[in-house]
Length: 570
Image 1: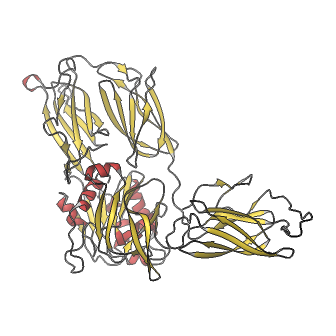
Image 2: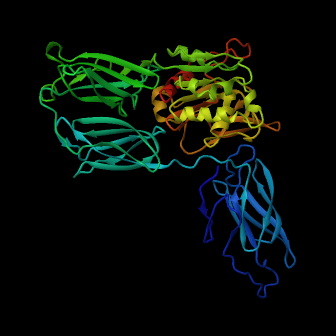
Image 3: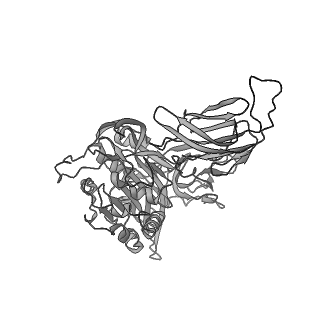
C-alpha cells in the first residue's frame, strides 16, 4: 500500500515514492589513517517501500541489504529492516548498479538499483499497489433553535455517525452563542443534536474542502402554545436473529394538507444513534402521515391528530407528546415496493433467493447473457438509472473481464457514474474483477492486478469469521460465527484503502506453488462510498446454487442476516 510522503530518517528533505533520485546532504567521507575500515568515497543510497509479491501487503520487518565491492575495502554490505509499512532506508552504498535483496520467511526478491553519488534512489516495488489516499475533510456548521422554547441550543451535545459507522461524540454547541463548527471526514454524516428536552437529527453530505450548514437560526422564536404538537418514535432494522437493533439515519417525514391553501406542508428529521426521532412544530388539528424510510425499507403511520381532543399537545399539557412506537418498542421497517433491484445470475451463488427470503422481489438478468452483457448493462446509463441496487452473483459470465484491457471504458465510466449518482452495487466472490477494474484505488485483491482471476487462491473450508463493525455486531448479537466457504478457489482481499469499511474478517488459507499458507486478518465483507452511492464486496456466498450437485448448501443463517443489514447501506 502506498503511503503519503514521509521524512527519511537522517535526511533534511522529503521524498515521494514516485519521485526520481533525490540529492542528499551526505558529506564526503574521508579515509583518515584507518587502514582496516576503508570508507566509500562519495557514496549513494536507496530508499522506498517493499511488499510481499504474493499477497501485495507491505513487507513489514523484511531484511533489506545491498552488497557491493570497493577497491580499497573489498566487499561491503549495508543492511536495514523495513518498518511496519515496508519502508526502509540504506545509505553509504558504492556507486553503480547494485543488487538489492529483500528477504522474509515467505519470499526472497532481488532488485537492480542504480546508485549515484550523493543521491538516494527511490525504489518502486511493483508488488506494492496504489490504494486511495485518506479521505478528505470538510466542515459542518450550524446554530440550532428549539422552536418549543424559542431558545438557541447552548451546550447541546452533537453526535456524528461517520460513513464507517463509528460515532464521534466529542462535540458541543457553544455555551454563549449555540454555534458549532466541526471538521470531519467527507461522506454521508448523520448529525444528532441532543439538548435539554430536545433531540433532532440531520443527514448531510460533506464534501472535501467545503462547508455544509445544518441549520442557521438568525431568528429563534417558539411556536404558538396549544397549537404546537410533536410526534416521537423509535425505528429498528427488520427482525433478524434475536432482537433487532436501532436504525440510525432513517429519514422520517410528517406531511399534511394545509386547510386554507390545499398545499402539502411537511416537517422532517432523521433517526439518531438510538433509532429515535422527534417531529416538532405540528398542528394538533391536522391529520398527519408519518413515513420513515431507509434505502430499500419503509413504514408509514396515519395519525389523526384532532381526534377525541387530539393526541398532540403542547409539552406543558402532555410532555411526552404522542409516541408512535410505544406499544411495540421500536418499529421495524419493511421492504419498500417502490425500489427496483436487479440481480445478475451466476453459477455459484444465488443472491436472488436470499433477497426473496427477505421480502424483496428482484428483477433477473439471466445467465448466460453472452459476451457483451456487462457492456450492454453498465454502458447503458439510461437503463442503469432505473435501478436502485445491482447485485452480481459469483460465477456471472466474465469473459469481458478477461479481454485485453478488461471491461470497456464505456462500461467502467457508466458504472462509476451510476454509483456516484446514488446507485449501489453488491458483488460476490469470483465477480470481484468488476470491482477491481472499476475501483482499483479502493481494494487491493490478492495477486497481480494485471492477471485475470489472480485473486482466486482461497482454500475452501469452514472459517471462524469475526465481526468488526459494532452496529452489525449489535444487529447479529454475535461477535463471530462460522462461515462455510465451499469453493476451492475463492477470491481473497489482500488489503483495503482508507475509507473502506470492513464488516467481516477471517484468517484465510491460500494456495501458491503447491504450498498452503494463511493470510491473517483477511477482509471478507467490505463496503465503500463513491459519491452518493456505495459498493459492497463479499468473498462468501449468500447461498450456493441448489441446482448444482456440487453446491447444495442453502445458507439462511447469519449470512442472510448480514445481507439484510447491508441492504440498509445500499
